[in-house]
Length: 178
Image (tube, rainbow, N blue to C red; front, side, top):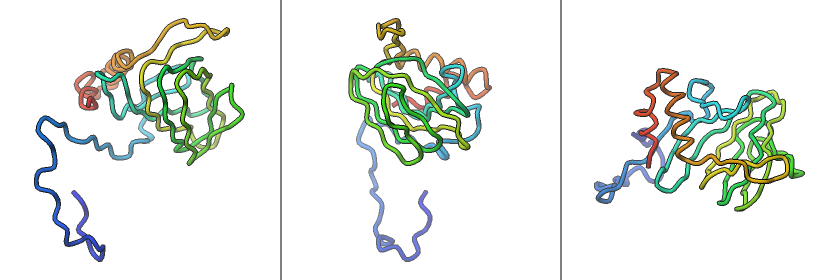
């Protein structure tokens, strides 16, 4: 619920009575999405974890906060679809590019781009909000496909982690489905 307005120009406007269209789902509201509570971060690699915020099994997409508390690495991969990233804190980049992202930086990854995500040592943990569409295609050292990771793999990883952490397992993860 919104705070009571005080002097805002819109204070007399009444909210809509019928917010949702038939068969629509409610919005997802997650307070303090980039929390420091590590129980909410699912290990994605030995050095990088992911906090799922929104998952669409039917469209093979998800939004998450990717976190590394120190130097980190996500395996070489490419995306057949676009990816959007917004840096919340820390320092990260791709070995294949000459930029390094820090707090406030936005990145659009074009479909078909291969890269090796790395997190740098920094006084703040790397936390990046990602919107991922489609699978990650794992690449070997020569850039050849050697596996994949899609929304269903992500869901299974999240289910197991949240069960282990006592946070509701698959039932909790289903609350993120839209």
